[in-house]
Length: 369
Image (cartoon, rainbow, N blue to C red; front, top):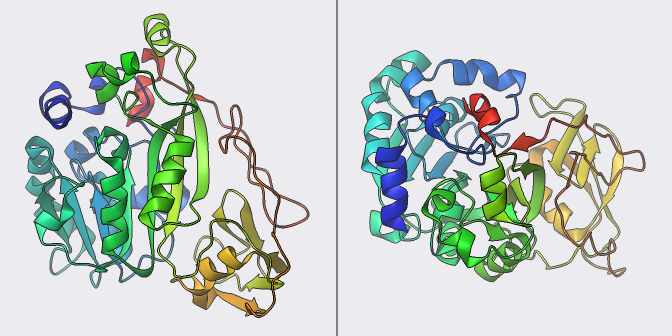
């Protein structure tokens, strides 16, 4: 599978226009704050971007960030601007042709960003074996990945390596393609479907089990969108399997439990995060209006209190008394099958308008860039 992926992304694909589906494409428009960031990235780097989400969590200034499967470096160069000259972004990829593009434009980006020195590094290697690259334990504040883990044969090893490399309080913020069931062998073994990020997609519940086994007790879904197959030949190969592009955040925080427990705690968002002055969204089920007291579970309390988000919240309560489960069990499947929405801890949730569903057929190829 490594050789298949290296050949597909190193030689078969020369730009995102060569993709035969839109699974490896981010169909959403970037938020206004990121448009000038992406506008400073070299056109050749942008042309060879194959991500399916936006891996840009808030509060990255001064952070050390690792990008798994960085490809030609689009996300590395975007994150390099957000961490600033005091921060660092390390990109890892196993495809030499992709890394050659990324390295070729390092000086271009340093000058475009106005930095005295480059704050990026690119390493060639496998993200299942990051220890071979000399990356030290607990040495990164944030780790990101964009539509790459599905391409890895040993996904459990990737998650274990991520947990090892994250500092306490750090997070893994990543986008990938998932399935509503275990992908059948006919799909998994098809070279094109595997290269197009479908054959290696994890069943969402298997992903949750692997994440928890690696040490991430409470994975949080940030957003998701359904991927619809419009090409008849492609749809016939996929059968009844439904695919989703989803973004998750996993925190390395001591004391997180596998279920949300109630300790009578609450938080108040101070409204001090840039670009989110009136409302901060932690994940798909947790949003916080500035100045409002919001009851939260022990896990949510810890994610806000024991991470870089702490200065932006006031905290009420402790862990001295337990009141049982905080919420009932969630839905059978966490993804929306039609429209995107935001469900919050607040009594009156804010719902975002539904986007046009992304498609896997040729009609959607122009949205890749």
